[in-house]
Length: 100
Image 1 (cartoon, rainbow, N blue to C red):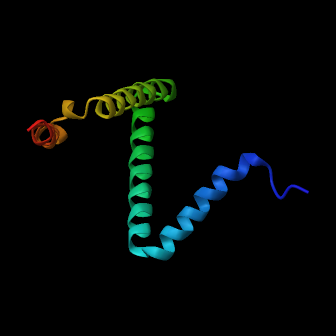
Image 2 (cartoon, helix red, strand yellow; image 1 turned 120 degrees about the horizontal axis):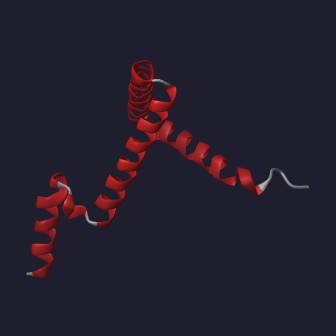
C-alpha cells in the first residue's frame, strides 16, 4: 500500500528542510519568516493602493507588468551577473584573477 502519492514528495521534503532549518538556526528561520511576511504585506498594500487608484483591472495589469519586469531582471542577472552594478566589480575582479 502506498503511503502517499508521489505528487507530495516535493512538499514533504520542503517541510522537512524547513523543520531542520528551525532546529539548527531558529533565529535565522524567524528572520526569514519575518522578511517574507514584510514583503507580502508591502506587496498587498501596494496592490490595494493601485486597485483604489485605477481599479481592479488596472491593478492586475500593473502587477503583471511589474512581475514581467522583475522576471526579466532576474533572468538577466542570472545570465550576465556583471550587468548589475552591485555585482559588477566583484565579477570583474574574479575574471581578472582567473585570467592572470
